[in-house]
Length: 616
Image (cartoon, rainbow, N blue to C red):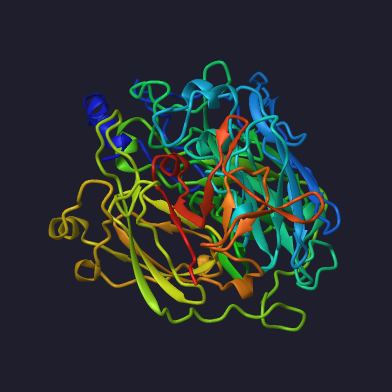
């Protein structure tokens, strides 16, 4: 039972017979009917579309000899021309979000990270009943920077319990970049307040380049570069009447209490509401991410023109995939080629979504968010090179993506929404467990596993595994009622993920062509079993111990093997014993391993995130 089901009864009387037929996209590119503003849902003030120029984040180029400085700051921005400047959180000198980091395969990126945050801009919204959240976080918000998609030593992975307080030193992150070129991103990952921190603005792009995909005009693959390669950070928001961002979606849940997520009613690209961008009449490369907290979108252009998907999170596909639309869940990234050469000067086209909210959300008054931005064709002809026919396996190209490996083990994991005595009366759970429960997954290094993600809810859940990339094997519909009747779910705290094989409702459907590459986040469809195949690497392959023990204090840098003795480097290069002592009022402790979780950030915060270890 999720927040929507809890609120459904409050709204159903008012909505019954009214919303039917009014939630949806209608004709291609058309706006849906105006939202019905039920008192159960907050709505943003009116804003005029396409009056702000699209901004592009600044770029930092990584060097193996020079650390990058990343600073979390409290700042402000104007999200829309007709709205006031409002408080935000951002990295470095950006007014919102963070700079794009460009790194190179095989060259370590070293980040010196510190926090200069002031009082949390959502101080009143933090729920201190959640795991580890204290009153102190309102005035001194903790952070934990995570390189999402990075094959990263555990102490530098942004563990949700490895927390940095404002104005309390510098944390050193070392990202080896020993992986294929791809589209990563970095964002905050602090325990139980991740959504508040990311929604406030703590997120940025990270492009990993190599000799094939150089990001320059002369790259061997013939891809657009420079001003024709653009990051598109897509988000959804609700704004208050005074123009401030709203972390809340409904007055039914009191302020300061966790919510289960909500559809935004304003589309943002790179921190602007419904921006516009003048484009040359040629080929562009868009590095697109769904950086929203909740919604899955089906994206297309308003004139239904075709475009090409050329890559996923872990790098390029074998060949471009021509399509007119594709679905993107939170945290998924897609590499796109878009050809504007068919447009006349001055002609416009919008980036649209037509995936409506789930039924329960629609009954509450949440509606499809149909628009993100507008592109206006300029006078210049632009980049007129053809779309490549292949991206891998040819001369001057990386090796082809191999066939999906045969798994050595099948692991069943579940996604559910158990009851709890609170308002709203549901939490989000993996394996029917809370984060702190000890029953964690322990795949063995060097093995290939199939994870069957059993989603018994009607809602989508984008599942992200830290450390590894994987392949999507397929999705299979599940008779969820029969499955649960035959396997009653125990109270939360007891692992529950029964074998679903006797309850399938149809054959497995393989991944769409545009999601057939290397992934770190998978859209686990409601009422389905989503199967992925993942290989867990060895320490020799990684160049570090994935099961090392490390300190929860990010200003300390030490590890020890599992069961070993803690040592830490001193200024002289020698080693000293490390002890668990209070640091800046926070008690340090030993941590180990990685996490996997739902990337609907409200769900991750409570409590759809579990630890896992790669053991030898």
